[in-house]
Image 1 (cartoon, rainbow, N blue to C red):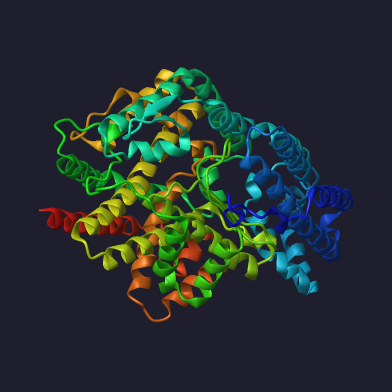
Image 2 (image 1 turned 45 degrees about the vertical axis):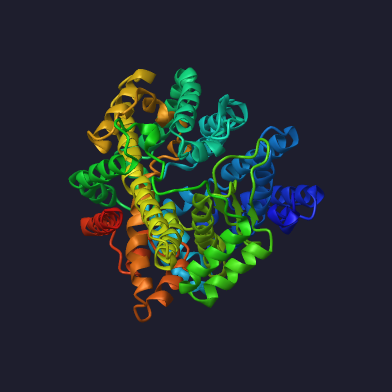
Length: 589
């Protein structure tokens, strides 16, 4: 494989020796930071010096952790990679333990005294947002001893997610299917997306049945793994005096229960739009019976995609040129300098992500399979990357790591801009209809489907918090019923779909999924403003990306006129969705 398609991890460390030396430096600095334990808020000097040292540790740690994680994700069956990842996880736990005194000592300090510190030492203002963030959550902070105890358990709490990842990425073998050309193909989580979109109904049915057969075989084990994760969250939320794990999650995202409730209010009053799209899908496919395995096929596709990565790069750059030279010059740098690990490899982690490495650059992992969806994935993940880049260039490491609440906005803005570019520039009516259909499907999958995931998650967490005992059958039934509610009567909700919840990795990051729906809501609003070339709006958008988490997430979005606590934001998504659906109906009629 050409090296230009692989990560260049030497951008982080030249070799393993440099990696090991950096680990040693962190350990030394962690011993030094403990010297401030018990006297952190004795003086402005102590508070400043401790935070300065903490910042130095984080800057090195982010490189160390990323290097270990990336090595592991490139080959999750490689024992050396596994060992490295375990080492950095252990270091992460050590960092948590040895810095766990910071939050409780600030929490239980005299707030007036801390305010005086800011006046006394001007340099301390660099860490003001982080310190205020602690004081705002005062009622949820435990004693120093209790915080230390929880910190010691942090590595244990990550156990369910790690077990799930290894089990489903490195150990699951789904079997083989016969593709459109009669060729025997090994099904993987990565290529499942390709085959479930096949124009050949038998191929997508094979993929669907093979995938869920494997999950059904291990459903009791996965249930236990997932419920353990939920219990960890619920117990922690209770210990920290939150009303629920949902409340803890939204407040940690700088969001609010109002954001979640406004989203679900809009979703539940507008499910008819999703039902209408399912009905349209069925009509377009011209099948007497319409199944869950028919859901992802685009009826306007004539041929299998065969888009090269070079073609995809060009299209993404052209589509995002509306964001200006400052933005697109960094995109070009990402393509030219190995920011992306492009292709599937044996035992490489499935899915796609972007991970910023402070003082280096962001890294994107994906498995490019020459499809249109992969082009969208590139635009999406580079949206994350550019967000990380602008934030890291303008904020210290403590303020650069924006919350998940804001994270999906920049990525989805890029997807919307890409789709709008493709629609405008496509001359062939059938191809144009294909692109509009893909845009509608992306909104369905991101807005409606992720909201269904969020509703499932809320139900499970509430039942656990109420002391209910749940079996795999309970989880399967809850998930199956939600599918019936969200999809309506124009599709056969196959029994196999009851196992789908068991393959969703984001369920191990509590209440992550609803933020995809809030993210696309904000993104549609922002993208429309950018495309209208509203005076000064692009500058406001780049400025918002550059803030990291220097402001609360809700306040950051208000910089670009988006209020996520207002149901009207989500209703705008429905309006946009319905408009595109009307255009599609006219184009195929």
